[in-house]
Amino acid sequence: MKSMLAAIVLAAASVTAMAQGTALTPVGLWRNVDDKTGEAKAEIRIGEANGALIGRIEKSLKKDGKPDAICDECSDDRKGKPITGLDIIRGGKKAEGKDVWEGGKILDPENGKEYRASFTPIDGGKRLEVRGYLGPFWRTQTWNRVQ
Image 1 (tube, one colour):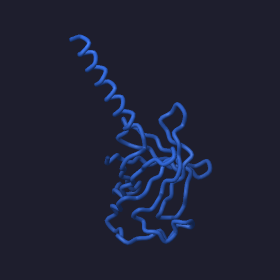
Image 2 (cartoon, one colour):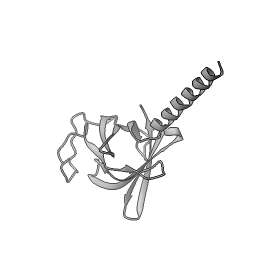
Image 3 (cartoon, helix red, strand yellow):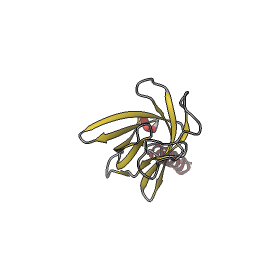
């Protein structure tokens, strides 16, 4: 009986640890919010390929957004591509010994600019701090996990 109880406790602990490990990652579906208006702008799906992050706009949530909008301001291979499905996060790998993914880039499709970026899960993985860097300056947004 004691060994069965111990096995149940260990199994529960390992499931909890696995759930926390999964939550403390940028991988998932996120909703970002406009810094100025507080309005939800988009849902971004972040995945991982070859150990690096990739994120694309899954759904635009802007009230005045056009369903067929394209990235007019982009200057690279994304120019003229639809906003929905657009890769906005490229790269970013987990820093050793930290819960932060660094070395990636993030695109702002509204102005076509790409910034160095870091991604840090917070609040047990319920939110994600997304920090974009341009030289010594940075701006941080907090995204909310949808899934």
